[in-house]
Length: 80
Image (cartoon, rainbow, N blue to C red):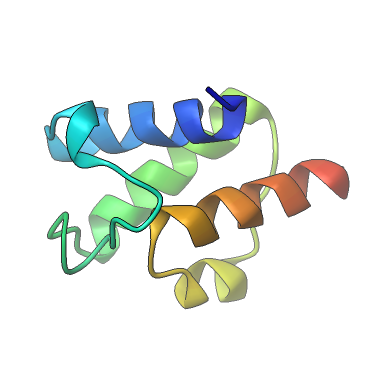
């Protein structure tokens, strides 16, 4: 499994108490996982800490699903 996806999944599982099998690239944070803005913030903080990156707040607000989040994480890693 790709490292970025694995780190993101772990952060989602830890924050939202969902099963990893529930998380696919098409899974949406709000609709499918029921995450609120505080949940998303906690997920972002965990990913940033684990991967030693910084994600742009404006870009984070545009992300709706796991696939988009992974793409954002990869972009942040490439720009470090």
